[in-house]
Image 1 (cartoon, one colour):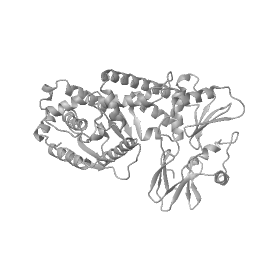
Image 2: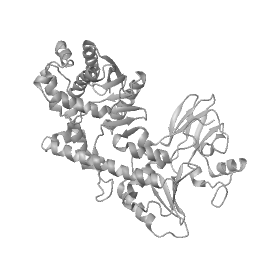
Image 3: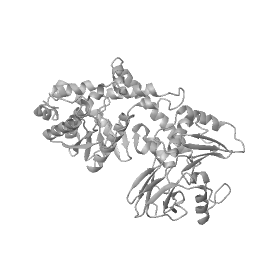
Length: 484
């Protein structure tokens, strides 16, 4: 950003003739902000600013929007230095100087530690979101703004279309083609908003150039070793406005499919039982009213029970649905999918976590960890604790000690295999807590445990807000809060 006219930048954030130079630009920008904020009135907002054209323009138009629509809201610019290029520190410092000159608070956060050899772009994005959430919490901001543009949206659509094996004819088959939502919830607490998804990059650069504001070009954006730059070259030859229309249609369809899933789960809620040990029982004939939405519904349930961040392949869920539809027999039958065991009998179906690859995690005092993608656990005591699943012998001893029976036909029916996939708390080799049975057995006060859904709680697309709420309602556990 060297060479930028500071006075021109100050002019840009006070309209500065933009309405004359680009008459439809600000109305469209403001409409994008109105849509992204959806009537909210935050007191603080974070703006992610790398120094590139998109984020720099976002910073300036956000300031202008707040001046006119939300004058009481404070803006904080945050630059994430990924430490992937030698120039990145100087670029971050340049953003800091730019923000200082125009009177906007600024903070630099660095991605430290080892970087992965493969999957670097995904890891960098995850780290960036973590750091932005950290900044939001620090500044008590409820909203993070990012400068994703219509160009980014088209590129995301093309990448997903290329690599996703679409299950033609199945509800939810093209959910990935909805691309980025205007709103995304990060870590269940901070809303990430993308107000520029209907604005093209060339328009933003025209706005900056009109005010003599320079930006930084990241050379990795042109590196064909990465997928997005390759797709960007392809996108230049396509009709991008038409692709935006396809994205909008896919987003409408994704929300409609999710609404059907939510409706089905709400209709069947009284029949679906949550079993101790984080499993679901679906009665025979479940979902008969809307069979074609069952594969997608099962996908959500399997991801939730299996502690997975992504849904299983829809084709696999369709095959599972067909298997469940086959006539039941007296003996139980089982299949595995997405780290889950699906067990059917004439009475119905149980979905439980598979008893494989369950972690053993030691926790020192005040340490916390994510166990199996399903539980956030924190040691609030003074002793070393170990979080692990019980063995058959340990479970039998625990149940006998507390006079608890398991098995069909017994009072207070529990599914034993579900309990064997649940976390227990050990101290010096002794079981001091078993939250799956917290409603029956007093638990240790030294552990805080919270059920989490990997498919929703880290990054939740706005397209999925409705279905996430309903699935979470199904899996409300007695230990969604501190157990004492």
